[in-house]
Image (cartoon, rainbow, N blue to C red):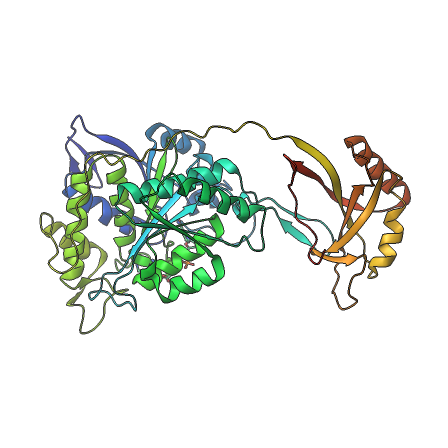
Length: 492
Ligand code: NAD
């Protein structure tokens, strides 16, 4: 027998050792309530508690977590984390993003279903799961200021990243009996990055003929999700879109305070609520622990303690159905009792072993496993250098004038073929109405039957130094198996 938070734990051979961080703000209160419920339901857990978040940040550690804590997280592999506060001001790295990427937690799974008629929602039959890519996209955090006027953020999308998350979404749909997987991208504009995600979605969808699949452009898809979420089932999408849409989905289902999230990797996994640390509500014993409890239920399923997960979920549904609500979902006429965090936990514990009468009770199959083969690298394509984009910092306004300055760095074999500004073609034959910044992309391509080599690019760069053209970045243009691996200029 040992103790955690004053709770007596019985040690059995099915014990799973997990790492727990109580976080900041309302974190400690909702974590205590969550642990109390799952341990009362018989979860077999050994708990190592670590400190992360605000205190660690403010002690001078810009990542918000000590090295020893990483050792514990990596050893235990399962991490239940309450929300943390990232202090205001520059220099503090988001611990959530760092944890997801360090541990390879590529899949973020956020179920959002309504609890009608017990929690107010305009979407009584909504029941969706958002599977969000968790490591790539603009969240690679690779940003640079390139000129006085222009900063950039690199959007990185990889084939392994797409394959892993899309397969995860289809496997999830398969084992949880879901009927459809919808892909959201903006590939009408971002043909390389979002285009790759969509292409791989189509490739993998073929392997799951029993599951319906469809693709929506993200803008109209998001509008449809906010308006008619019941037409969706599982949604798979890129990191940024998924981040935004999963908060929207949770909120329209009832409240962000009700949704949990699983971050799954090949060896480690982290479970949390989707909301933040709500500092204004901290220390008042009023916060809703449901979001973190939902994360903990996902954790119990993940570690194979499905009976406990089922018992807790049904008791939680029954409590919601009984009208025992924290302030955030309390509604006169619908709710019966406005309760504190700790009293909500007590009510759920009292309902263990019961099932809801009106809300649909859950049954989780034993030993749920997703078939997720390791990524296999494809044979390399035939890669051919076909040009180069030189990005120039220049504060003039006439693209014709810039063309004259830049042309001289070219030679017989490799010549200036186009200039764009913020992606739109401004030379040759630009529009004088086009607004230009001080950041210009000058595309050089080989002439006629010539080919271009890396040495030609070196020559262009050296000449640019001699004639005073300020090149801030280069991007090589390649064809892969004869297919262009770069975008055209807009209007080209
Ligand atoms: P938030 O989600 O913490 O709170 C927004 C509002 O939602 C709160 O004022 C509160 O009214 C309500 N709310 C949220 N959770 C609730 C709950 N469980 N019960 C009842 N009401 C709840 O968002 P924020 O105020 O923008 O962020 C506060 C801090 O949280 C910031 O420092 C932010 O960086 C951090 N944050 C952390 C995580 C995480 O650790 N995963 C996620 C998001 C934000």
